[in-house]
Length: 153
Image (cartoon, rainbow, N blue to C red; front, side, top):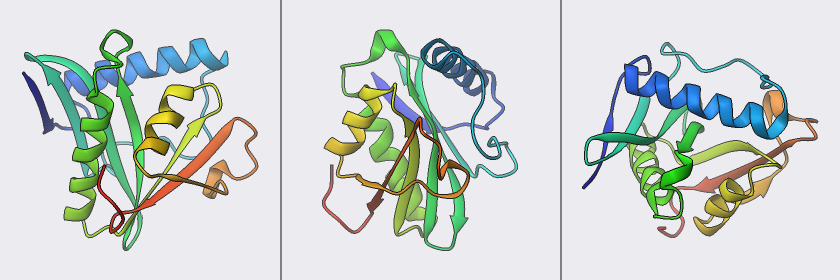
């Protein structure tokens, strides 16, 4: 049974999932760094944790950028749980939360060494855009956006 619910950014499950994501990104890219300011509990109004029979398997967050625009952050599904549609479910839940925050658009950054993520976002209707903010000019970054008034997943 899959549940996806809000949890505090600093809850034990949220922290463990973010740590796993960080470890995977270090393994893929060879370093622990990200452009810009790392998200914190102070700037993340929505952090979702997906659970499969109670076990945390994935997460995602929203960070407001400006009125009507949010950035997707810390989207992650444990490797053993990938390929089961959980990423799509988390993304759909985040988009619903974004609508609840009054967002009309969602933007995100992912990396060139994350083809699974890129595929998920493209299948969900996200379109590649020039990298924004701290990601502009970063050769390993790819940025995407989706208007929330466009087709459903």
